[in-house]
Image (cartoon, rainbow, N blue to C red; front, side, top):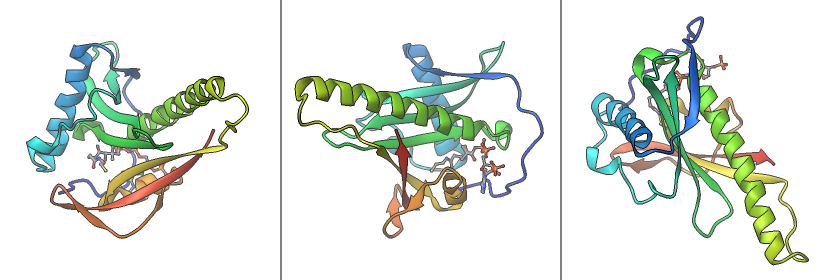
Length: 180
Ligand SMILES: CC(C)(COP(=O)(O)OP(=O)(O)OC[C@H]1O[C@@H](n2cnc3c(N)ncnc32)[C@H](O)[C@@H]1OP(=O)(O)O)[C@@H](O)C(=O)NCCC(=O)NCCS
């Protein structure tokens, strides 16, 4: 279902910013990008695009400045009752690929994970001051479409287990042990 296989980078990215989508309108802009990329372009079913993690996830919006035109998104969350995070729904509109903007979104998500992990450790330590060691790494898991595994590998994500079907397309679980 992928459409984009060349790895030649373009020269200069247009002016842009990455924000955490906090208003309903910004969240909708993230969703619109996902529908454009995953459903219209890659032909994944529309009904699988929204899952029950939408509300607990942190959504990042990449947009042009000064126009504020939305062009990319990524989503992250700490997996409930677990100590690892998930990176999901990374998408850049087709015309804006290969400017290293996908890379910027991943790095923004990593920074957020480090901060969130730190906050979580502090909260847990204040509840159990003597029993809570600080972690040195935190795992981030993503389910990569096969064509884009080399992109994730550039950040240190490593394949774990066998390929599997997700929403009708083969995927590979990839895990990054992020130092915190
Ligand atoms: C995946 C995606 C977000 C990458 O965004 P992008 O902005 O084009 O990627 P970048 O320009 O930041 O690329 C970063 C690095 O990855 C490499 N890369 C990008 N796309 C690649 C591809 N298809 N295959 C191999 N390498 C790739 C770039 O060459 C660059 O390498 P470098 O840092 O060594 O120079 C974009 O292709 C996309 O939106 N695809 C459709 C949605 C999708 O498949 N999402 C992933 C779901 S698992």
